[in-house]
Length: 179
Image (tube, rainbow, N blue to C red):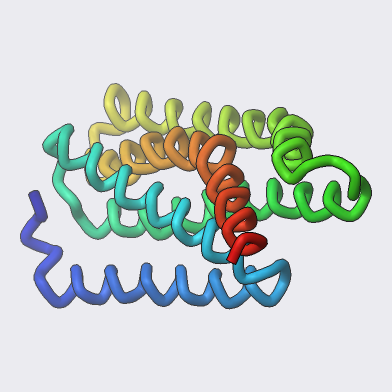
């Protein structure tokens, strides 16, 4: 359900802004790491955005301008977690050439796990406090969509950063060596 403030033109612009942001991130990560890292990261972040919108729709919540702002925020938030893990993978690849790619990825995720979970947990605590405040004290529910989208997105983004993007990268990397 899309609210009246978000007309066809605004939806189009929001989609284009998201696509431009993902393209820019792909170029940056391809330059900073390798193109395979960029492809895996952009696919995982797009997964996060689509899953958040899907869950938002299942809940029957209105997609307003604040929700679109939350989605754009989540793209950056999730990409940050992904880059932290990729940076650890790249560092571990340099240090241990005898391990298999899967072992390096597994070790890298384990080394980044506490940092990612702590970041997500503290963000979740702030969002829970906002949700509580908006619901019981403030009474202004204009930003509740933002908070709900952020809560869903933080959970989905953390999940994908830890369990989707690295296996996806690993699969793409193995295909690169075969083909």
